[in-house]
Image 1 (cartoon, rainbow, N blue to C red):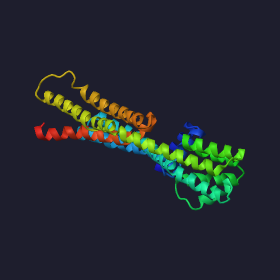
Image 2: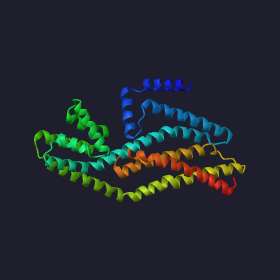
Image 3: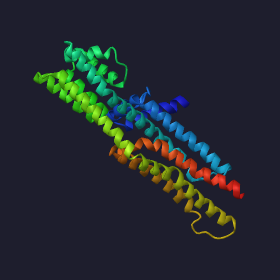
Image 4: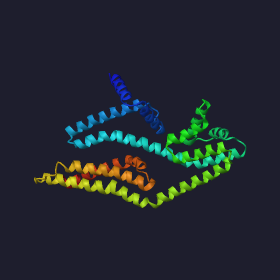
Length: 307
């Protein structure tokens, strides 16, 4: 019975999503080292959401846990999973770009001793073991099946959405076709990429104080303050005084914590990388910790005040 339900869910997922969407999600899953089919992963997420919803509703009925908290736990499942996949893909791309200068330098050394560009890639792929080399191996495999080498090389940059890879491979292809001195050009590219990496590290170091301020504000200060406001509202109610905001404060305070956590994550991406999308990976850390501080602050002071 359970397997039949899972198969029905898979059918609906494959019907609802286009083939391009399924391929795109599958590529991202593989980039995150999740070697499962797209429909299997989506079914697992749906089942987990239903399970958490049932558990949280039971806690709501018997332990008086906030209904909003129960719903937020359910919604956080796809958000956190998506953030994890994005984070893993970003880390993989970052490592590829860090490995690129050394890879290009070794490629140049092989060309200097007499290898052609394709032969140098093939020879280097036998000794290197990293994510960039995995992409090169895939390009060489596609070439062996008849795909043009230049096209296979550029597909690496498009798959990983990397400007550094795109710029590097375009220069390699142009130099190969024009008959230029590829080894010297590759050395220059390697030096330029190293300079870019150093500039990025210096930029991160210079803005780290601002990032720390944002993290402390989002993870500790704001959740703690809003948790106290919510607890004070409940305390006023227990004292028998009417509080017209009693029903609004829990929703508003939690909503503010979540919204601020997401916005701070995107802002950190802008500060560190000049790209808000780069900040999505920080949601995976900031949102859960903000909620933990928000609720723990209430439980702590409830115990102290005996509320």
